[in-house]
Length: 383
Image 1 (cartoon, rainbow, N blue to C red):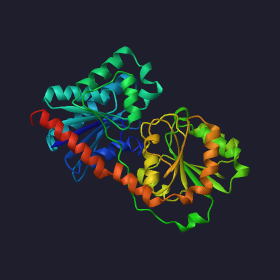
Image 2 (cartoon, helix red, strand yellow):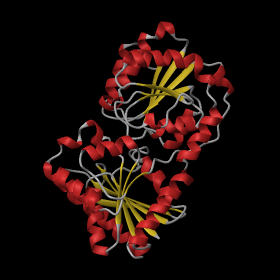
Image 3 (cartoon, rainbow, N blue to C red):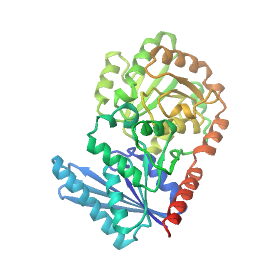
Image 4 (spheres, one colour):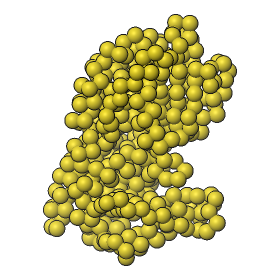
């Protein structure tokens, strides 16, 4: 079976972390089927209007269709034109799909619906977007919301990555009769026993898009500043980029912590993140909203305990055996969790933590779930 992925976000030359969860789904599914991903991506620096970058990795084909970015009207046209060019390349050089899998609203849903009608093949939808939970969807126009509900209802299946996201979508009346929770894929690396970590400063990490209203990283910096006299030597590392990056750097400088106890790494690849997680003592996720939080599960899979908020995702797999859960926007709770974690992080069973994540979220487990869904849909469609 040939399956076409149409993601709203996907790793590219500007952001290697963007939508990496979709890439991992594609790789998991490619163990059972041939998968092609088409991702149109805006590029301000392009001298030409379009450039298709094709990569082949076993049974996974990726076509990133870069298009010249200008004004909004041109960008919309070029987005769809870039997709069309990539689709023509796919069907002429490789194959025509038997099923379409769209990820994240709304233009991807529109394309999937149109191709489904034209080719008479089924499409399914996966959602990751936090906007259903924190109110961004409610601010969309009635036309936008109606189209989203229509495309989801017309799909042969809807999958979401957590129960919290499913509840958020249900409240917005976005439903499908064939709905499943299929979690994100979590990489399960070998646990490294880093002797140096036992004698160096306490190392904490946050990995996130630097959008403070969602990730609330400023509260972590402020809390660590307030706790400095109560803590041993520590380092707090932040991996990620975003619109509030300069604001957070300015805050760290104001507290005289920048490049002394608080370190910014910028946007990095998933491999960089996984390697760096091996060198920390624990992870902090202080988000106001998460639909899953892959990095939380990745840290646990690396044998590192976590401090995480009940923000829609982590509370479904963070337990006393692998971390500490706190409420959102609870600065006192965050400080108490840090003070509790520092003397306790070595007491967590790293291998038990890893094995639990492997059983639930490894690529093979998620690939089998996707395989079962794809086969069901195609069989129901008469293939």
